[in-house]
Image 1 (cartoon, rainbow, N blue to C red):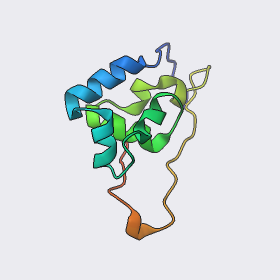
Image 2: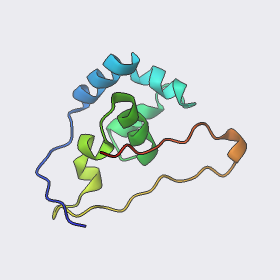
Image 3: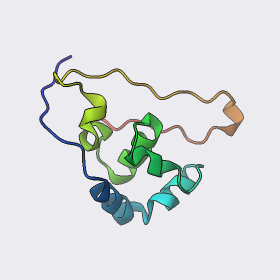
Image 4: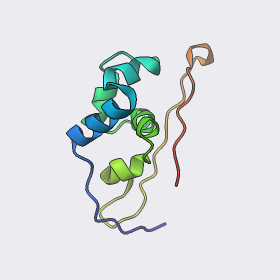
Length: 101
């Protein structure tokens, strides 16, 4: 699959503003998803598929629109990614679901 994209990743402050508008704060969103308050902040500085999905679902925008550089290579081809499954099912929260258009 080849998709041309000249889009840039959203600026970190734009992501934070969207999360604040939708959920109050990134820390609150982290806690609502069973994570430490600062965990989702890592998603803003490095790729983490599960965190990207949580943030994207919270603001109603597909993650590939927020972080196109994490989903498409320089030629516009889709990069294969996956969310790792937890080893202990009894500790699983609601699994994040990837929004699609």
